[in-house]
Structures are given as C-alpha cells and as structure tokens.
Image (cartoon, rainbow, N blue to C red; front, side, top):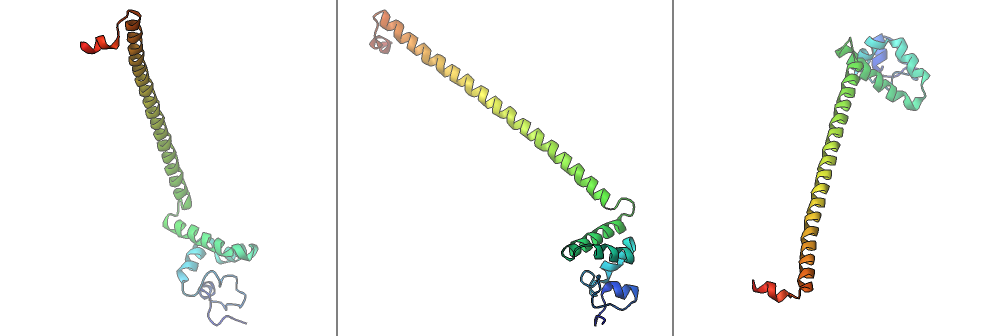
Length: 151
C-alpha cells in the first residue's frame, strides 16, 4: 500500500512511496530541498542503504547529519565540514593558549601579592622587635616609659 502523500525522496525520484518507506520519516513532503541537497551529495541509493543499516532509534540523527554534511558540502565543495572542523580546532587552540596566559598572569600576581605580604610582615616584625628591644633596653638602664613620654 502506498502513502497518500509521497515523501520528498519518493517525489524527487518520481516513484510511489511505500507505507514502510525508509525515507518518509526523515524527508517529509513539506521540505523537498532537504532531500534534494542530500541526494546531490550522497545519492538516493546510498541514503536508503545507510538508513536501512542503522537501528531505527538513530536514523533521525543520521538523516540530520547527512543533511548537515551535504548542505556544508554544497556551500564549500572543496573543504566541506573539514573547513569548519579546522576552524573550530584553531579556535580551541587559541582559547587554550589564552587560558594558559591568563593562568600564568594570575599566578604571577598571586606570587607578587604574597611577596608584598611577606615584606610587610617583615617590616611590621622589625617595628615590633625594635619597640620590644627599646623597651627592654630602657628597663635594663632603669629608664621607664614615663621618661619617653616627656620627650
């Protein structure tokens, strides 16, 4: 028994569309350009064969992938998807380089801040030690804090 409306694949190929047509679910009559594009790159026999060899639950994804690959190949017959993949790899490499540079800058600033903190602690420690030494020396000499407050 034939479908009351032919799918885009059967319409394109000018044949009857069987009830169990493997193309019908993925190439509806409302979108004939989709099948025409895929047919131009893969051919009807290859499309049918690929879909039939796959489990039903992955056929829709496969048809979408074939359409994507075909539409990109039509736009760029030389490189197709390879051009996009290369561009994405280049973008990824650039992002990784930028991230490494940013991490190095953060590490540098953290180290610089830690060094500044250590220097400040040393200065604070010297001031504290100086005050303690001065107090100890004044006590040893019999001078009290009152003497220093008069000055």
